[in-house]
Length: 284
Length: 284
Image (cartoon, rainbow over all chains, first blue to last red; front, side):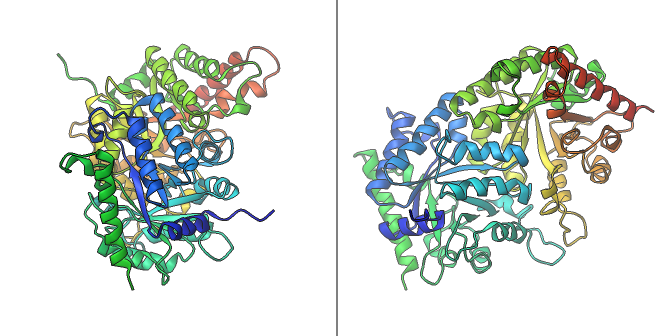
């Protein structure tokens, strides 16, 4: 039996297959649902769209499901399973992080055959340090899954802590990056541990791409948060691989500004436009 | 109609009423359940114990419920509601933190009359900065609730990021403390925004107690993590108020080492022993 591929290898393969690093973010605010479309239908249709368009992954944001209570969390579990069934990587955007046995409980929630919210990868917060990430990374690795550690986020507030200078003059987010490097796999190539680096921070990305040769970079912020496809080149390696670009509202909310027609077709048109823009930005 | 009290005022009042800052942590690992006792029964009995012993609060850790899937999350919602019904403050240990509209969704999950996981307070992570905390604090304030921001945690990993020195020579956790201060209420007295400061870090606590006069300090780490009641004095103000001391395994797991008898009584005995130790440590 061949060893299972790492999450990094799986992600690179998925991007190659579809020819694009675009990931469909699923952030179902109530006001973003097309009239008459249920939350579950909306989310599943976005997964179908991602599968039809050969996107590498979907990234459902758990907060919008948690806000709906236990029933929302049941929808979240179903959605992750549905994406995996359709052959689309499911990145659970949950930003978990806690100590010791609590981190083990989170790991059991997301990784392994019996995990109720089994995902291909999750996002995690580094504030509590290495021992808070190790149980997540260990469980992910055993399940060919991934952990994207928050390093330099896409929001204004990234200046408050992440961009603050350390005693060595380097921004503080490089300490989070050092955790990513320390937790990474021994093998060459992209591995279990990735990093969240906002597309709004291309200078940070250039530095982090060099510091973290084994980490897939997850680069949110294109679209509603103001980053553009033309900001993305520094996130990719010399082969133009190694990054995923999740876009939420600019795809899933595109039906709002479309003139009539099917809401899914409007989202598909927006997805294709974005994919073309990203391709153009990454062209040699 | 009188203005609702702040969470800080409510917490101080609850501690005065019961004469102790002890909080019952509820971390239901499967192996910690007494034989034949269901998760829901175990958790509710710990709430009953907290109410009977006039503890200020309970602190259920969400990870152990999330690991059980949507049904576990239903138990979590029920448990928070049950604690509130019994007149015990419910601190949801969830360590949430995300940007913009996602933070608003988390706020809607935990605060306000229609929140499915309505809590008196939550824990939150500061890594994403001020704009990630503002929606939580705003929703908490409107519901007389509280937000405990992670500042200096109780684990070994606190050294990795939190204790790293900034360009000003001060440890990085003081930047998180500055966010706590900036988000605090204008009124005097303890307010909406508190700070998590591990009982394993009494030197940090002395500094933070001075920097954050309006923040209730939540000080985990007594018992299983090695901190002792005698480490707690620096967490309290000159009136010996302003801190809460959650203890989990040393109370809820006490039935394991008791010789026979009712499991709840064993937990009660451990709770009373700890309460006496903390009282002795804080005596003038």
